[in-house]
Image (cartoon, rainbow, N blue to C red; front, side, top):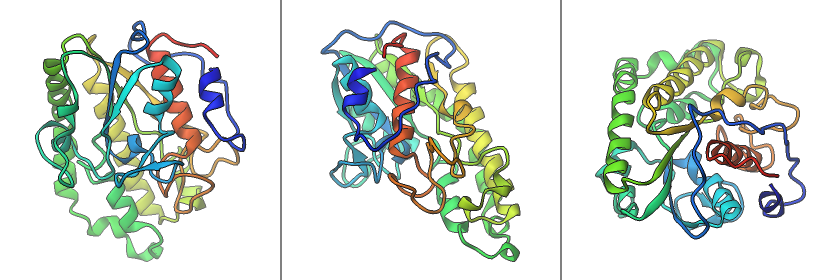
Length: 279
């Protein structure tokens, strides 16, 4: 993946173990010059990853920019921190039009990372970080509302994907999953700075977010680049090749979000889903 390597600062240690797709199926990549639209929230935008563009936490080295550089595509990146599914489909955000407005009939590729804000995953993690263990912070969240949002999420993701296909019938659509923030042994990960109870609740919420992504892409119409599955061992307590930060920022990115290396790996997964495994 020579173009990806050249585009990243030398201090970032790259892993080249990821050479296979984790998608239901793969398709041929769009031709060079084709139109590519990137949609999503902060996990797509890349806050804290150099260099930042505008006010949405959007990086010129987020996974969509890396994919576009590798394939020679014409990228329109409208991802934005804090975005929800309505901000993609029909609601403005920070005076910006719904993200789907960037998609047109000639769009060849669309990537999407969205849904975490709809179920309050990241905001709940932020709210409970650093609390004393006895606080049991997540018990004070509106868990009923969160549970209702979780139940609605697969259908809302599917409706969003249908809306994208309606605007760009020929486009390849790849849903890019959130990298796993809470590893299997998350309770023992001090980098999270969360109590055991809060860790257990938020880890389960992250698993439900992943399940919604899998459910929404279970048919043969959309691809999934499943960063959640392969991020195990690359979470906040990893000693190297850390894809996601914990409560403190290791080198790049912002807390509880992908690092620059995480965006490299998400880009590799998108490319693999598109049948491009070149180095």
